[in-house]
Length: 372
Length: 237
Image (cartoon, rainbow over all chains, first blue to last red; front, top):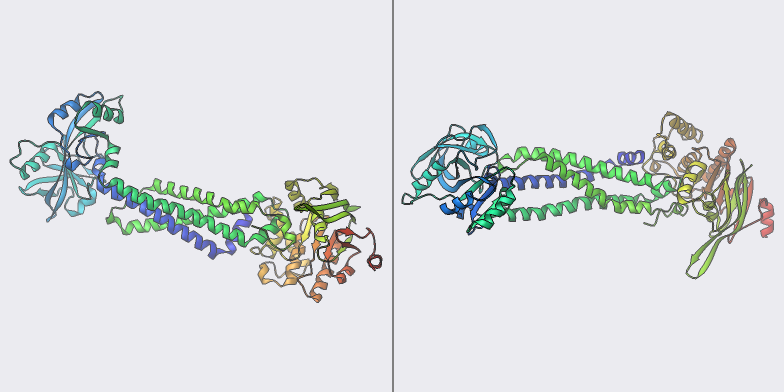
């Protein structure tokens, strides 16, 4: 500790710059992770945060709710599969609405009020109890979707009153209204008055006790023709655009995860080269190799901890500034990220550790430092 | 009482198919409080001898006892501990840790020995530096000290653990004649004041006047142990 801290104390600028660089890089990782989570939630938050444990699509829909319809006989067949406690219709469609005196698009999810498909992240107000009521996203509250606001669905002017707000229930980056299925039907029929019936986009399943979502999904796929049953997580991950967004971010984040430890490892390797003579002298006067290695690792730890503190400070400041971008703050993933980066930095610093272990104290007599 | 007892020590390096003998059946005894100058030209094996005496290098043959410890067969780990506890070193050029100030360069010895640089250690470091005329330079980094001051700090560090033996490897080679003489005078007075044995490796015969005895080394072979500078010089002539 003595050697590590004294060196850092005497080279504040050098170590400060490294900690700053690490801080910036870790901040970028944290921010991009938050951006990814926020973006995905805006794409498929409504699916992720509804109560159906299994969602059944038309197998021609390619996991896209917009292109999916479930026929009545399919719904009946799904309901009879072992492990299905409740199978309820779930409707989804995009409508032109007037909210807060502004005309725009909104996605309406219709579900049976006593069945699965209800939003699970209610933060204010209540769930709908009758037709004409809706839960909206808290993110859109200021845009005419606050509790008590009335949203008008065009072209017929169907009125829906917001009675509750939920967290992270946007869909396709649009405002969402969770309404009872009858309200959804009314909105669809208003747009297409000649339709005989409004078919659900999917079936939301509540699983019976003793069964798992994946088992039930597998059974439905095996027993019912023309449908594709997905667990909630599969539905989220398979939504159009989500996997490509996720893989793009994964590549970028992967590069950052590579760069931070490499920068740290290289820095400590260079520092080890630069102070080779001092390390040789210390070995010659009786410093055990483990003492010098411990000193190096203490410095790596200190730099990474200071860098993480800087990163969290920047992260907190940045989140305040870009709230409207839908950036999603998640503390645990951020902490885990910092720990992973720290572990990787310790791994890359092993190259410097190896150099320290190779120091020959005899080199002190030649004045040549050490052959690194 | 003998502090350093080297008997029939050989050091042979293997280079391809050839053996290079760096030290050839060297026998050297240094008594308590005695200062021995090891005089020889470059490449004569004097640094090899010093390294073996200080546990930086193990001999190929022969025995080495320092302060009663037979270090001939010590492992690298044992030698590290031996150096830390029993020997003081002053090297030719690299002598101080650049990011530690003068006081800390002494305290590091205490730290390496498991101490925490407490009040006692600090008191001893300050007392030593004061005796070496550096009481006003405690907080200075090596880069802020002159060459002579740096060597004096190194002497302080070598003496910090009260070693029985201090090994000096060309301690004045980086200093001008006048400063070199001052440092040698200081080495002599400090060793005598503490009754500490010392071996001083040098190629400069003028430095031998500060030693109690001079031993010459040429091509890895020592002149007869106990020879005076005059007899050794005469023998050489």
